[in-house]
Image (tube, rainbow, N blue to C red):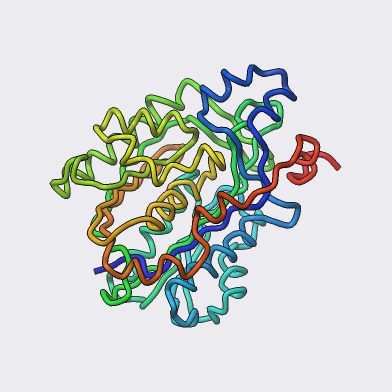
Amino acid sequence: MVGIIGYGVYIPLYRIKTEEIANTWGRDVDSVKKGLLISEKSVPNIDEDTVTMSIEASLNALKRAMIDPKEIGAIYSGSESPAYAVKPNISMVANAIGMGNNYTGADVEFACKAGTASLQMVMGLVKSNLIKYGIAIGADAAEYSVENVGDQSTGTGSAVFILGNNKNEIVAEIKETVSYSSDVPDFWRRPRMRYPTHAERFTGEPAYFKHTVIASQLLMEKTGLKPADFNHVVFHTPNGKFPTRVAKFLGFSNEQLRNGFVVDKIGNTYSAASLIGLASVLDDANAGEKIIVTSFGSGAGSDSFYIEVTDKIESKKNLARTTKDYLEKKKYVDYTTYLKLTSRIE
C-alpha cells in the first residue's frame, strides 16, 4: 500500500487579468478568453521562484502529514523553470524544511509532467520499503516571450505530496499508475535560450490529446474501471479548453471535472498544474471517492493515476491552507507591474 499522507500547494498573491494582457497587445479579448477559457493568471512576486514556492507548499504538506521531516528519505522536484541552471532545487527545499542530510533525490525534467514523474519515483521507493516517507514536488514559474500569445496562459504555482505506506496515515491511496510516451516535437527550449519554441501544429492531436487520452484509457483498462466509476477527474491544463475536450471525449462529465479545474483562475502552472488540481479535489473529497489524474508533458508523455480517498482525509484537509484559500486571496497588477515582477524590464 502506498499513498498520500500530506499535501500542500502554494499560489502567489498577484494576478493579472486576461484582458489586461490582451488589450496591451491589441488582441480581441473575447476571442482570447473563449480560446483559452482563462480569466486571469497567477504572477510571482520579485522574490518568488520555484524554490520558495516549493518550500511554502512543503510546509503546508508537512502540517497535514504530521511527521518529523527528518524521517523523509527522498525528495524529487519536477520543474522546467528551476531556480538555477546548475544547482538542484531539492537540496535548498530539503534544508529549509528540516529534512537533515540522509536523503536521496533529484530535480526532474519532463516538461509539464515532471511533477507526476516525481510522484511515480517517490511511489516506487516508498512501496518497496527503501524509504519510510518521500516528497514529490511540481513547481513552475515558466515564461513565454511577452509578444507571444502563449504568455496569456502561463501561470505560477507549486504543489507538494508526501507519500507513505502506513494505512493509518494515508488520506488517499494511489492504487495504480501507468504512463504513455513518444517522441513529439511540439515544444522545446534549447540551452541558453530564455523562451521556448512552439510547433503549434503538433500541440493538439499528436501531443496533448493523443497522450492524455491513451494514458487514461490504459489506466481504465488496467483497473477495469469506467469513467462513471470515478467521482473526480483531473487533467493537465495548458488552457481550459483542452481538458474540457478530453473529458468529453472520454465520457467524463463537467461535474467530475469541476473540483480540479482551477486553470481559469491561475493559468497553466506547468509541472504543478495537474498536482494543484489533485490537491483541490482532495480539499473537498470524501472517503471512498475515486479520482483519476492524467498529466501531460510536451516531448511528449502522460502519467495517469487511480487514487482512492480514505477516511483519514477529514482529519487532515483543514490542517493547512487549502487551494481555495490561495485562489481567493489575490491582488491584481497592471501590465507594467507584471513586466517588472517577472523581470521582463529593468
